[in-house]
Length: 150
Image (cartoon, rainbow, N blue to C red; front, top):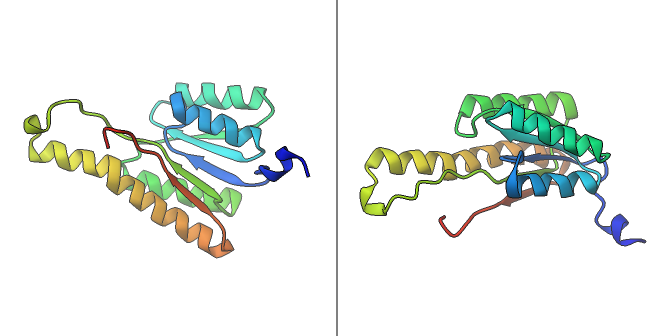
């Protein structure tokens, strides 16, 4: 068995939030290179379409899902589409995070709640919905990406 066979993700479906650029794109690239069908999320259609085009040109399969991760209804709609179209989700990479570089003392309550809604609650609700799909097949991987600012 070759090293590529050991790490093959052929026929798996992966969702990567914030996968259109930077570290998120590199994760989508590696997943697609390993054979996974990658669903890339983000708020900017042009960025996602460019990422999808790049992955397809390299021989991978990918699609874009344009939405704001903090929009709960949009999350539900994407998960419903994944279930309808693919019948499953094997990998979820929560990569999105909001940044506000002000000193903590400058945050009002609303700013703190907004950061928690984007960085914590959105990842948890999306993970919960993904886990429901994964549980049906008794297989799945939930991956959370964070940073020092977390």
